[in-house]
Every structure is written in structure tokens, then in C-alpha cells.
Amino acid sequence: MTIERIDLNLLRVFDAIFEERNLLRAGRRLHLSQSAVSHALARLREALDDQLFVRTSRGMEPTARALAMAPALRQSLQRIHETLGAPTFDASHTARRFVVAANDYLTAVLIARLSRNIETMAPHIDVVVRPSTRIDLAEQIDVGRIDLAIGIFSEVPQRFGAMPLGRYDEVIVVRQGHPIACRTAQLADFAAYPLLTVSLGGQEEGAISGFIAERGLARQSEMFDRHALEQALAREGIAPRYRVTAAHALAIPMLLRDTDMLSIVPRPLAGEFAQGAALACSELPYSTPGIAVRAVWHQRNTDDAGHQWLRSQVNQAAASVEALNLPMV
Image (tube, rainbow, N blue to C red; front, top):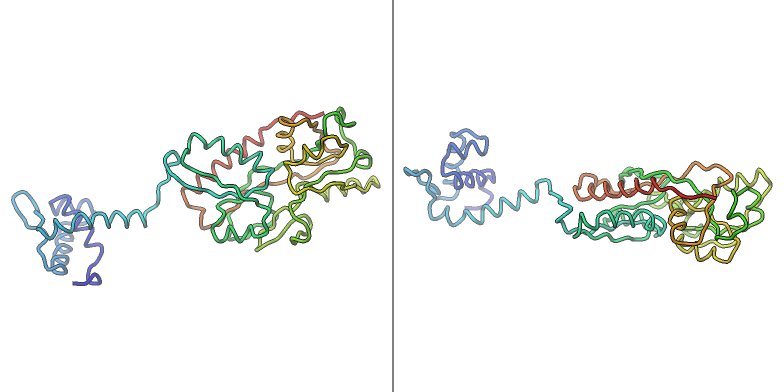
């Protein structure tokens, strides 16, 4: 006897007969007629050269061969079911590691809320945060090293899924005691005071029009809308002075301390700064379309139960960020 002669469906019939000890009940369990079960048992008997079950007054009694093979066969069928069936995901008990890519600003305002939200409901789940500023971000998603990337993307290739998380406008932050800290900012202030900006990647990394394109995924290279600023100032004949360009948004409070520089940041980040640093916030004296933040993942993970749970938790964290109220001068 070789395995090639065995129809694996016959093994399901064997397991049902072994469990039920009755051909009729086994058929009902498998949604088969009694004659179909009898025919399947006959084929299995011939393939294995053993009666397997003997009809008695107590039902279908297994032979010694059937008793010997039943436990291992049941385990094998269970493994097949677990492999091919839809996996279950219970956040309260599942141990799983998710890798999320985000810059330091989004880590501070969004991932921090995500971590707090899942701390009690998913005690065995770990979240690893990688920098989204790496130039091989799309490749890392492609090869499965990053589960979810959160950021500002102008283009998302079809092989990736995407979910909007909110649209954030920009505000000005300055040190407490700055000359404009007690009034609304004006365009003329950009002529009087230099700027502190954050760049997440420059021309050396392929940045074009404020975005870095890599393997079809175009991600933001600057944390503010440079075009909107320079367009507004050009109408007033003002050329902005970019005194300091930093790579990390969370360094802004220290860089603004004891200086008269202005910095333009997303509103949620200004809210975090206002809570923990001696900074004042002011509305921009010009309009911007706002920055759309999205979560991006590979399409192969779209229907994964654990990944769906992660995306729902990120979405909830993003909703709490949008609900922030920021005090302005």
C-alpha cells in the first residue's frame, strides 16, 4: 500500500466512523448518505487490506489496526484543518509581534496612543517601531519586514493597501516669551525671524517636490508644506530664511529654546509640545490644504485577522489624535 492510492477524503470518513461507531451518524456528520459512507469504507478497507470496523450489536467496532492508527490520524487531520482553515485571532491571548514604520513625530502622537490602547487588551502583543525615513521602506514592506507603514504618501502602488488616518493642518510654534508668543502670527514675521524646519530626506535620497519615490511608494521628505509657505511669502516679496534644518521633529523644543526662530509643525505635534515644553502656538497667516496621513501595508496582509486588528487599533488611535484641542495665542 502506498499513500498515492489513498483518497484523503476517505480518512475523514474513517475518523467520523471511529468517532460515531455508526455509518448513518457518520454520514450525517459529513453530510453524506449512508451508502456513500459504506462505499468509502469499502475503498479504504481495500487500500489498507484490513476490515478496520466490524459490525456488532454495539455498533461498528474498530479493529486493532484501526485503534492503532486513529489517534495519529486525528492529529494529522487537525493539523491540516489548522493549516488550511481561516486562522483565529484573539488579541487578549495571542502572542504576536507587529513591525510598524513611522517617523518620530507620528510615533510620539499616534503610536504612543496605540501602545496605551493595547497595553491591557493585548498583553502578549509586541510592537516594534522602525524609522519610515529609511530609503528602502517600500522594499521592507515587500519582503515582509514591515507590517504597516504610517506617514504622508503622495503615491501608493497597487500592490499595497492604504487606509486614511486623518488630515492635519500646520501651525507655528515658538518659545515662550518670543515676540510673537502673545499675538497672532503675520506674514511679515517670516521676514523678521528665521525658520527651523524638519527634513526627512533631501535630494541626496531622491527627493523631488517634497517627496521621495522608491519602488512606486512616494513618501513625504519634509514635515511642512514648503510650497504653500513660499507661495504666500512671494506675494509679499518675502524670501524665507531657513536657518536650521533638522532631521528629527522631537528636537524642535530644544532647538527653539533661547532663540527667536519659528517652526512650522503639524497641529497634533504642536499639541504634544504645548503639554510638555515651554512653547507657544499660533495659527499660520496663510492657508494650507492640510497633510493626509495614511497607513500602508502589503495587499497579501489585507485579510489576515491579526493585521486587520492592528489596523483597527491604529485607526482608533488616529481618531483620538484628531480630537485634540490645541490652545492658540
